[in-house]
Amino acid sequence: MSTPHTDPETLDLQLRSTWLAAPASAFPAVLSSAVLHQALAPSQRPWLWIWIAAFLLLTLARLAAVWRWSRQPLSPERAQSWCGPWLASTALHAGQWGALGAFAAWLPAGPQAMLVESVLHITLAAVALGGALRLQGFERVLLAHVVLVLAPLGLRDVLAADLAHALMGGLLLLFGFYAVVQGQRQSRLMREMREQRQRTQELVEALQREYQHSEAARQRAEAATTARSRFFAAANHDLRQPLHALGLLAESLQQSRSLSEVHRVAGHLTECVEGMAQVVDDLLEVTRLDLGQVQVQGAPTPLRALVEDACRPYRALARIKGLQLALDLPEVAVYSDPTLLARVIANLVSNAIRYTAQGQIDVLGQVQEQTLVLSVQDTGIGIATEHLPRLFDDFFQVGNPERDRRQGLGLGLATVRRLCELLAIPIEVHSTPAVGSRFSLRLPLATLAPLDPQAAAPGAAPPRALQDLRVLVVDDDLNSQRALSELLQTWGCSVQIAAQAADAQAQLDAGFAADALLVDLRLPGEQNGLEWLRSLQAAGSARPALLLTGDADEAKQLAAQSLAWPVLVKPVRPAALRAFLGQARIGLPGLRA
Image (cartoon, rainbow, N blue to C red; front, top):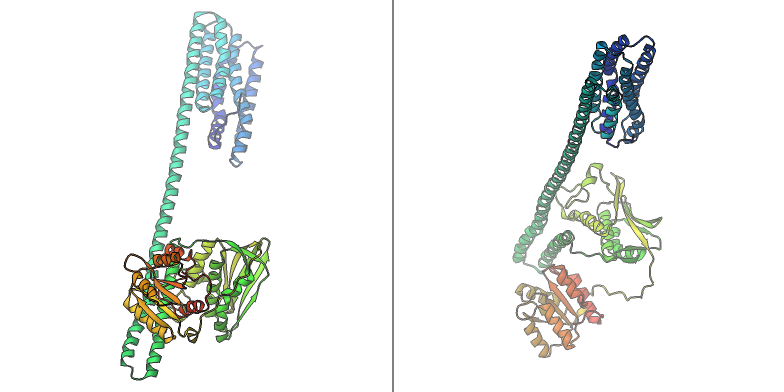
């Protein structure tokens, strides 16, 4: 008899139902035994007592088994281990009932014997049907049970070879067939119910998962809406502040009566313009990161040189605040995008300087197995635990509810988060209020290939170094023409203006030997600025050129940079413009159209 394979819950139900049915089967056993006891000869009665004793022992054993079963945890392994004892007890129980039917062969002929045999037929038929119903789901076990219970009595009817026994045997056969068919039918219904329950459970779980996904999507959408509203509200405030100041300063400039007062107001105007440019640049950088317009170009990068370059612009700021900016880095290389990683480090260092009043900022590197842990640690104000979850949110700042621009815009760490996600760099924050903060990056180590030495590009040239530099400005916007012309002339440059590519070409053809070209990307006419520079390059006219654009479209910038022309996005900082013109003055390679 093979071991049935089913789920633990179903097997638990089967074992309990069959074993717990043992006491209930004692009543028909006692009744049948009493009737047989009266009909059997005295010499045959001891065999009946042996049968009764064996039946009672098996009943007690089954009750003990179900007690032990119920005290152990349910599991597939435990269920399978109990299948053997269960099948053995079921077979013994069915065999005992079949043995009871065998006693009919010892009954003496007569009316009393027919009465006893009728009781036996009815009792065993009921036992067979009850067992068939309890064993639903296990067709082979069910069939074996019915055969073991009814076969001995049926064989007795066949051997009797008279009409009465033939009739009882036929009825017994039909009843056994009915019991098997009914048990199989119940088994089929049970399987269908189990499958339906399984499908229902799977459907419920699928609906729960779908609900969880929908709820998570709803929460993300609400969070995105809230973040977007906060983003625009903060951006609106940070842009309106310098705009408001610009309007007031412009009015003050018109009312100024002395040159010193004009210079003072003009200085404030420059600060406002630079503040607005900083806001716009930060917003554009966040937008480009969110839109996936920034591509990662990983390469083995020397760590110390990269960190020193990233920190160099902030050393003067640290000295002004009386802070020490110290680097302690091993001579190793890491694998990352050097440009994007430098922006991460610069933002962390800038943030540390901003929120540190005294003490120092340490940039530390520690090798751990195949990675390097790069930390920026300060002795600043620290961050409270309740603020840490929002630390990398857009425009979030600790201790700056009035949105003072001197404390930054709140986009530095938001940009760091986006860049770290883009670079797949884990970032950790540990901070204690009034003690300081530590931001840690985990970078993969790399083997650095030999690098060709490169000459360092010069920085921004002082205005006097641009004396008599011939500059051709190609821009169709009158305000931009006027502003650029006045600024360049104050630096001593000789300036010519053209509104479109055809006018600029005409001035070059007329003999204006421009030392540098400042070209707007979008020009009216047949050619835009980029196309005109390409035509100059094709014609062999080598002149340093700078593209200016108010369009931050990364694709256009990359298309221009692929030809080694620098691109500046308006508003252009004067320092960046002076740096380009200084490079053009000394003829730095890579700037010529």
